[in-house]
Amino acid sequence: MTDVLKTGSDVICYCGACKMDINHVILAMDGTKIAKVECKTCHATHTYKGKKGIKAPKKVTRKAPSKRAEKKAQDVLEAWNDAMGGSGFDKVPYSIRSTFEVGSKIDHKKYGPGVVQNLIHPDKVEVLFKDDVRVLLHSK
Image 1: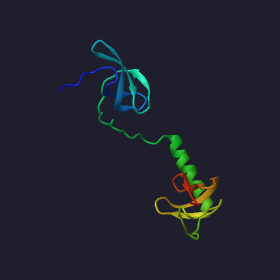
Image 2: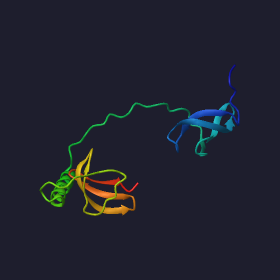
Image 3: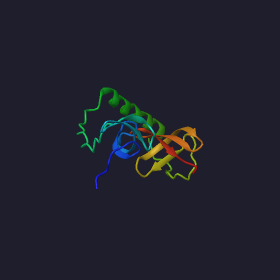
Image 4: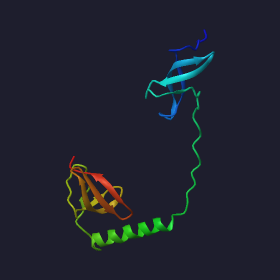
């Protein structure tokens, strides 16, 4: 049994808004060809584009860090060293349930020791780690 394409039928084609092959409804035909379709997910109306299929991911090549990136990394490290005060500190293990204030020194399982620099939101803090500044949740 063959499916006859007609207005109101479902067809899978590429949706530019959703960026994938997805189910559409045929809105208009031009003879035996599909002219216009509507995405059943985002309801975008566009010309029929057919299936794109899954493309192989592009090969990622890593570039050497720029001078700007190196300078930022160096600045972050210097700020971290200044904030940590050089010597050891009382480790407060990071937990999403703990509440932190500006200046609190924490120990994160993945990122290591850090210092809370800013309270962004009642449940978010900006923490300076040795390699970068990260936003973490707290008080949950």
